[in-house]
Structures are given as C-alpha cells and as structure tokens.
Amino acid sequence: MNSIPEIDVYVRFCETDAAGHVNNTSYFIYMEEARTKFFKAIGYDRDNRGEMNFIVASAQCDYLAQAYANQTLTLATRVSKIGTKSYTLAHEIKSADTGAMIAAGSAVVVCFNFQTQQSEVIPPELRSILEQCFVTV
Image (cartoon, rainbow, N blue to C red; front, side):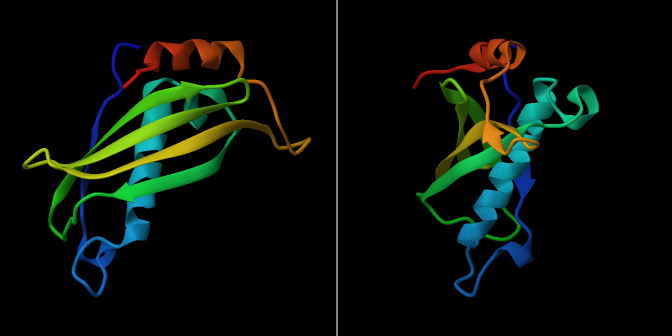
C-alpha cells in the first residue's frame, strides 16, 4: 500500500449550526467516512473480508478554524500508532480551496470479538497492512 487516498466532503447546509459554521458533531461524520474509505482502500471492508471486527474505542477532534456550508473539505487519513490490540487513525481536515487546516482528529480502533465481547490481538495480515500505512509525524 503506497498511499492512502484523501477524500473530499461537500459541506451541506444541514451540517451547519445557528452560528453558521459546521457543527462540531459533523466533523465526526466526516472522519467516519474517511475511515470507511480507508478500510476499503486497504482491502479490509465488508465486501472483501466478511465481518469487520473493529470498534471505535475513542474519537477526538481539535477545531482549528471554521468551515461553512457549500465548502469542500479534504480529509487525509494515516495510521499514527499500532498497538497489540488497537491502532490509531489520524485525520487532517483542510479546506480544499486553500489548503488551510480546519480540524485535526483521531480515532482509536480496537480489534474486537463480538461473540466473546472482548478485544483481541490485531490479526497478522491486518498488522502487515497497517505497518505499510504507518506514517510518523
């Protein structure tokens, strides 16, 4: 895996709040879309692997600038940490027009066995893929 594709998100009016800028909760939806496309890009989506045995254990977002309706945002995703049972995906959200940083977030994704309701070790095949996508800052 040489690169993780960036995605563009068009901001709809319904994603803004009374102040006129993108509502804070919308950024988590954008990052979820980026994660979904990340999994597809690495060949680890429902179509290719059956059940996705992951859960998001933690998600956070730092808001750096305002975004508005009718704006296009570009999201870049990278693997920033790999543990024994979890890994972290970092997201950068920028204005597609100017490249200005709008927000930065991350999600800790845990490999999870839904039958036993417990976390489990990252499978070797997935670990290998994640290591290829790992980028240090």
